[in-house]
Every structure is written in structure tokens, then in C-alpha cells.
Image (cartoon, rainbow, N blue to C red; front, side):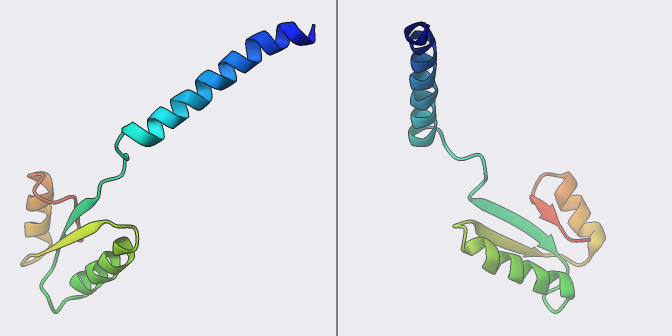
Amino acid sequence: MKCHACKIILPILALFLGLLYIDSRFLPPLAPDRVTIATGEKNGIYYQSALRYKALLAKQHVTVEIIPTHGSVEALVLLKAHKVDIAFV
């Protein structure tokens, strides 16, 4: 009985481990390595918040580009046009 279970479990385990290895070596990560954020003007709180996110994400090797706007309406237009990934409004 033990050998029969080993003949089934061991190949499945080896296949699973092989797929994990292939996934970790050859597939790109799911998270982006670059993010664009639309904020308000440079003297506003949204811009300051984006600077904090930039510092935090830099530790995770994510590049953040901050795009200042003239307000929430412009930030939403950029977001809807897919020109930025995140917009503070």
C-alpha cells in the first residue's frame, strides 16, 4: 500500500516543485516595476503624499513618476485616458 501511494504522490510533488521552479526563474513578476501617479499641485497635500509613496515603493524597487496637475478634474482625465496608473482626487 505504501509503494502505491509513493508512486502517485512523489511524481505529483516533483511536478509541482518543477512548476514552482519554472515560475520563479522564467516568468516575470506580476507587480509592475513602474507606477505613475497624478497629484495636485506641487505645494499640495496630494503631492506630498505621492512623495511618501515614492519613498516607500523605492524600497520595493518600484519606480514612481509623479505627475502634478491643476486639480482633481485633470487627474481624473489622465486616469480615464490611461495616462497614469493612480490619481489622487
